[in-house]
Length: 112
Image (cartoon, rainbow, N blue to C red; front, top):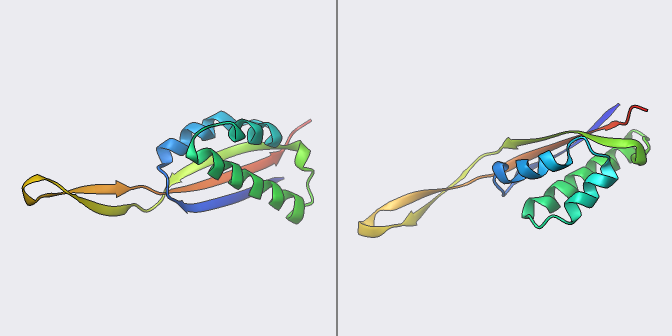
């Protein structure tokens, strides 16, 4: 049985979050949370919160044992970009793209 949680419109580049996703894919939930807790990146806290949400969904909605759950998949998709302009020399402007992410965590019971 699979359980998922989605966090949308997070103001961080998907490229930065994907590095963290690769570090915790396939790990048990407790181990994944422990790894993320000690990572210095901003995205680590966001991914940790999403994994905790998926674990809570499994516990409350599906009555699954949280200790047996594994991070089956962690998908980081691109969200909409906020477009801004920065003033440059000679009256010009340069476009700045502020990227957003959609994070999806899929947890599954560990096959014993």
